[in-house]
Image 1 (cartoon, rainbow, N blue to C red):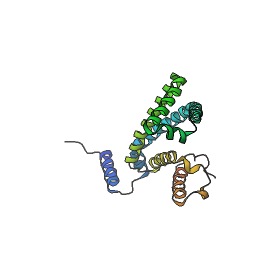
Image 2 (cartoon, rainbow, N blue to C red; image 1 turned 180 degrees about the vertical axis):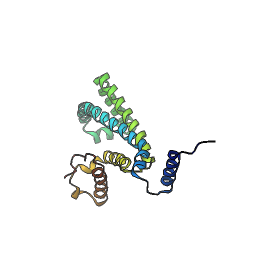
Image 3 (cartoon, one colour; image 1 turned 90 degrees about the vertical axis):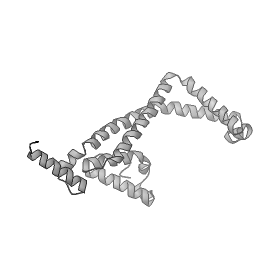
Image 4 (cartoon, one colour; image 1 turned 30 degrees about the vertical axis):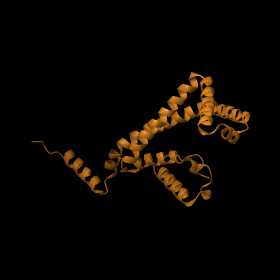
Length: 191
């Protein structure tokens, strides 16, 4: 028979209280957010890497966009190109040109683009898990707020007063949680 200890009693009581939605002491709440906090650290690293890769790829994408515009202009512009060549043929020709341009960029571009896509796939999987896990304390709630902030970065592109009511409300909630948790606010939060 198992020996009953004070630790087992306290752990059982905290688990039962959490399951029942009862307020739990901060120490118990913090320890129950351990997985969320760890996922948050992993997400932070993935978002940093995605940003690095995006900055590296950005000049390639700008050059590709310029070359695609030139290709379309050679055929009278995008509308004329697709009117002339139709849906499937035009789409195939357009995609062939895009692939030709990307191949000319070489393996650095191809490798970075693959890693960028894989990074966002990993972000999506971790973000899904963050959404599934309940936050039991401020640390867990902060992880969720950082995720919401990153997925809604457009909310900080302009002053809060210029946002529609639902976006203003969402931004205010995210900023409030981050402030309470002592987390840095996104650029433009003071706007």
